[in-house]
Image (cartoon, rainbow, N blue to C red; front, side):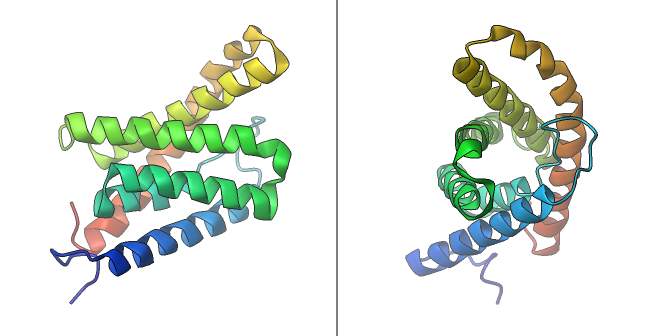
Length: 172
């Protein structure tokens, strides 16, 4: 019997799934930070979002927001440094919140991949907003279209990655 597809999810099962998603997300966050895939400053695929999406479809949106926050916070402590924390945490939390709302309102009309793309956009928008506040410069929002293009590519990649895993374990 698969722990992910059982009808009853006890507290200990939830904790195990959460811990796995946080750990996998941190590893993906750290691995991705070692490579510059896009030649765009701040442009990342967002591989850690795969763990958030998986958690959202297994345990629900509120849990995914918590996982996203913890993964981002702990990932910054372990690798990203304190300077990256406001950007990473705000992006991760807004992204998870938007994906949760979209899933609740429109899934399955909007697929897991579509939910991921919206999450990527929200992540970039939050990071630009935080930078605009920190630097007191609203012109930073002019960079959002560039990050949106990168976010679409990243959202597609992470969405298909999460979808492949969820299909493999029998979760739609």
